[in-house]
Amino acid sequence: MNCVICLTELVPSNDSLEHIIPASVGGKLKKRGVLCKSCNNTAGEDWDSDLARQLNFFSVTFDVDRERGPAPPEKVRTSTGEELLLHPGKPMTQVRPVFKSTQLPGRIAYEIQARSMDEAKAIVKKLARKHPDLDVEAVLASAQISNELLAICLDKAISHTAEWYYNDLGSNYEELKDFKTAVANYDTAYYLFKEPLMLYNCGRIAETQLKNKAMARKYYTLYLRTAHPLSAEEKKAYNYVRLHYGSKK
View 1 (tube, rainbow, N blue to C red):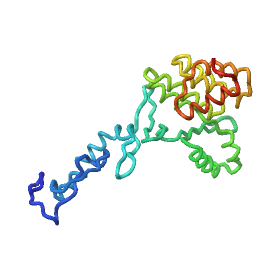
View 2 (view 1 turned 120 degrees about the horizontal axis):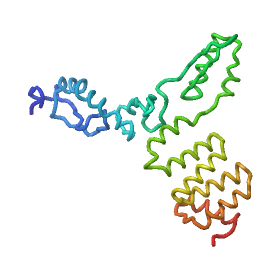
View 3 (view 1 turned 135 degrees about the vertical axis):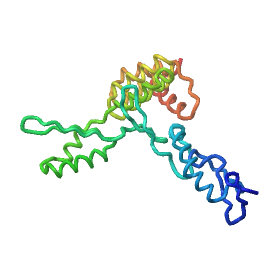
View 4 (view 1 turned 60 degrees about the horizontal axis):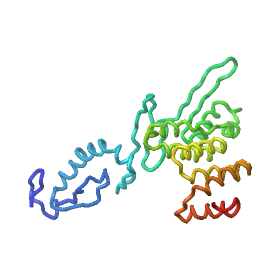
């Protein structure tokens, strides 16, 4: 048996394990008797690396399970020209943090857009070395968590997944503790697609966060009229609402 590239006879000392599908795109099945060690190394450096680069977008998008670990982030550009990083199994992030300074009369104004609070803290601490009077904790306490990037990402698929769009917005606004906006988005999701669980989400927020029993009753009543719970979690939610807000008619 010979190497399929250089035709050198394959013996135990020069035979190698070759991935049938490259490891860089999730291949795990290996076979001996295909390439010698030298050609295998060359193919890995030349062909496999180039193929991995070309297919990295798909490895990231589908979170391909690779022996060598997660695929590297893929840089993409939005229709507005903004550059973002796609991560396997994780949300998009900015390619790099934004740091801008503006000279104003008697002071300097700084604008920081970080990809995480840890990153923001590191930037502010570095800035504090230049400005010792800067209160790092006060600056971080005043930081605002933005929904802008999520909106940009979801907007790309809204024509196909509008229900997910409003559901995800509702969930994200809950995390931001903007409960009225969360209700508005869950309500929109129900209006468009008639998914009863969206009514439950509205009622749950009205009851537990907004402390508005009248609003909660309105949503829960409609939920009881339309719900058809299937999963154990849905049945638990349904039974709670029926117990506290009346029987389904």
